[in-house]
Image (cartoon, rainbow, N blue to C red; front, side, top):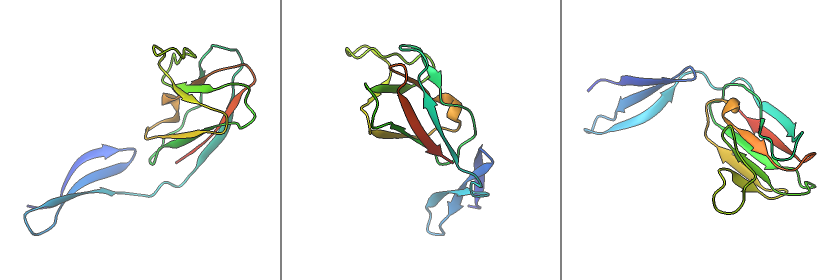
Length: 124
């Protein structure tokens, strides 16, 4: 079996590599990310979802709640809520906590929480 490209993602080609023993391995072929997207986002209105920003990512993103936040921040898709009774749709970040996401674009993530609280983010 010859090496076979089968998917393209953010400029990278996913390949099946023939290992020569009847098995295959997955590899990404292409340029390494040449940038880092870093930033901060502040919640302007309690209970209103805020987009982190926009920008293509290859390795994903880490989001960290500011350690001096007054309350937890919730991270999720557009429309993320601050509902914390088992029916909400966001991941709860206590002040100082972090979470990573494997997303292709920063615009996939939103935050919600208490006015004035903020998060830091970094990805590439």
